Length: 261
Length: 95
Image (cartoon, rainbow over all chains, first blue to last red; front, top):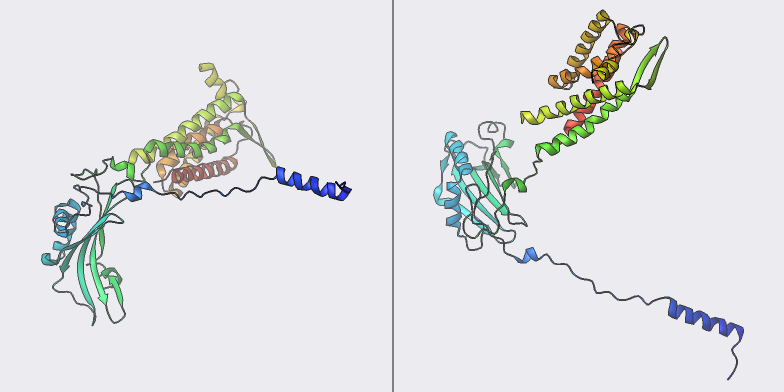
């Protein structure tokens, strides 16, 4: 057997080191994450303030439900005050599975509506309930006069027309209240959990925390001499009293806003 | 506690706090600053709540160093900073 040269030995050692020291890269299987919630058909049985959302809902049921909702009735009253006339036979609804939502449209007509040539206008109440990932319903009731301009291929509301902006303005109706549901509802939860409104205590703590920065002033004493102002550390008793007073004032100042709400 | 309050208010060291007339003038200046800066912040109540924080440092100023102009400038500066901080804090707390 032929003896290895120095170079050959070095190459052999290097090859062994590389072969044992460096692990081959493992081919990892990428897990494709799936949101199981997406596979669930979310449904909601409807409530006083929300439309039902379910695949087998008919448009007639959706329209009938919408007409019982207080927010919709408020919008209908406003339309009646404006002199709009309901076109009940054209009431309609769209039921969507993905995203889970129900949309109801209640068309009206305005008898004395005068618009520029080739413009068509129609008052409309739209009610939309959509479910989020947790199955919580979110409902919007909006109403206004929709104007169609086929010449310019534009659709806009009466807010854009100066002569109608005040009398026929669009508006939203606030939808409030807990989401009580009927049969088929996936989850019942407090309404507050779905909103972004922070508790008063949380807001007070944030206000108090930041406002307390002003109390750093209490650690210093301002002394005035002719021609110069000197900032020095205050006496301990003064710091204690002033700081306590300051914190009390700041906490009271932060409290005002939330007591008034 | 009573002794602590006396020491915090410097009641036993007359030269280190304002005289009566000086204090009255300082209070009026502090009230002016509180009202003006409260109106600037559109929250007069907040301005008035900050009033003690303007009066106390005025009280513990040595009477020999006190002048109305110095007090006026100090009150404006302190009230402006405090009002600004409180307004910022209230906004940071969110709706």
